[in-house]
Length: 553
Image (cartoon, rainbow, N blue to C red; front, side):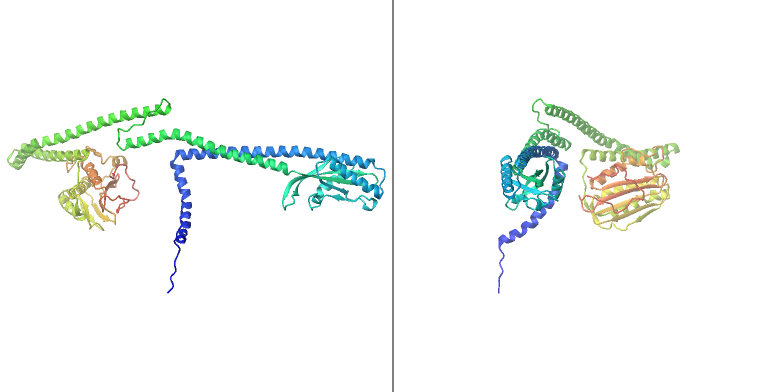
């Protein structure tokens, strides 16, 4: 049996590649997040970018200017040097009085010696002009090896020199000269026409190597690049220091603002110095002190108001109980009274019941305001709660000729909820639907998904305008105060229902349109505390969500 062993080092290396690839792929997203979230990072990047662009432009302009100046200066020297050499050679040829073979050879040697003595160039070539009869003269072409390479002396340059025969005009061109090691160096070839008595037209070419000027330019460019890089880093460092000095107080102010918004009213910005940042800190702290004082005062007033409502409600219970008992006695014996007194007993009984309901609602509202409302959670079927509430509301519905239709495609599962509060919500929704349904059928539907369960009550009555729908959950608000009420509600039912839904982390929403009725939808999470994303029951087509119609806690 053969056992294959894998080196741990190789195993580790095999994971490095994918890890680095993931890191590289994450960089653009991380940079994008830093760009959006960090003012300091964004400011430094913009500063470095603008500085780099400015330095790059200045460096390129400086490099090109220095390069042109070096070339023009070197060209002037080359042309002066070449003219001096050509003049010396032409003087020797003009002074010659014999063109025999021996004297021609001596004359050519003298001309070369004079050219070398008069010029700094050692790249010399003397050619007969194109079309010159070589058999008529003993002067043979002469050229340094570096100038015999094809293309060094171009045909264009030779043509220009030929056209300038008989004059002392100089012609030049930039070329690449062989440096002897397989590479090339920049250079200039200068051509000048010569006239040799008895021999005809010839051309003198001198080559000049510009490697020293090229090295100078490269040194200047390298210096500019290094200086530009160092200057960019210096500016980046300065920008970082300055931005940090400015951004840090702003960040402290932002963090302090967040803490204030979170309810930590005692936090303040440290005050240092006398500059504008210190002035901002003092102004901010003064504003925070003022806000803290006002919020504290409002909180105290709210507590006093809540305590007053609670105390009054409790204190009214005892006399109300006495009045209720007396009213019940009178109501039970109303048949034995005169008609006017009997009617008074009925009104007393009705208003006493309504007064008692109003006190109960006020006590419930005070608990919500004080944050002391709690839930009695137990697994309950929303369908069964709805059926029980419909049965309780059926006598009222029959008195108005209203048919209540229940559809339950889903919702038979048990959900953790407070049965008393949910039954109160359903009763309020059904009571409103009966009150404003104009005797038309009311559709109640229950459905659920894996994450939510919903109940909708839809009437086909008078409906509400968009403005009324936005205020329907306000306390003591009524769409039509002059309208006769058959239930005798307190005006707090929907406000309490909204608070009950919020305690369950649910939604209570409304859709309504004048002449088409209204629809209230209660949506609850199937798992307590789970965040709702959508409702199992859709709203009517063309509906618009009413701002403030649901609250999620």
